[in-house]
Amino acid sequence: MTVEFLRQDNSDNLTLIFVGWGMSSSDFRFMCEPVETRRSTSLQNQCAISVLICSDYRTLDFDTDILKPYNDIRLIGYSLGVWAASYAFREKEIAFSEKIAVNGTKYPIDNERGIPPKIYEGTEQSLSDASLRKFFLRMCRIRENFEQFTANMKEKNISHLKEELRVIQQLSMQYDVSGFQWDKAIISTKDAIFPTENQRKAWYLNTKITEIDAPHFSQSLLKNL
Image 1 (tube, rainbow, N blue to C red):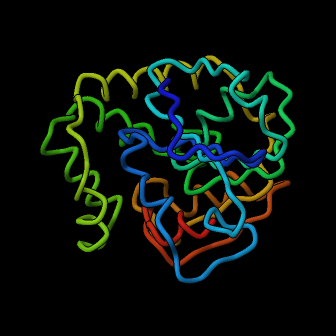
Image 2 (image 1 turned 90 degrees about the horizontal axis):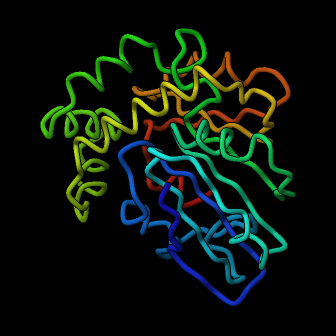
């Protein structure tokens, strides 16, 4: 796992983000850009907030010592990052102030509550530069979103991305992370990666659900968390 600060301020507030498969901290730099509408719970609020990004789930070890300076820690899991965070913290006692799952579930490969296995396995088996680009386009859905997402994207290592998918598949079969509780699930109604209905089935118990008219990836949605 790669753990990088997107922003580090002299504050005891931290937003910890587990991003999706194929993403890195550079793909989330927009999270620290100004927004017009500010909410008290937003990443862009008036107080200084450090932002820590976790990516590359070929390994899932997380050293919690990096969290010790912070008294208020918000956890955001996005896409397959929801499962990755659930796995990383399944046996750790971290007093998160809030845990928000966005367009992902604790069941990453599941016909009813996650990505259907045939689609997941097909993505890994046929992965190439061209198919990855198609994946990102489907993820963004709208051409403008896609162009924003890919504008400053660093080159992706296809062999590493295949390995990441294999590791997630293997570990999700071996370990049960259903006991890790999320406070809130945000579901996009136009999600073409994690089927919307599957997300509803995954979260209908013990988790507050908010549905948003958006595709799987939306900068505006993520910036206003």
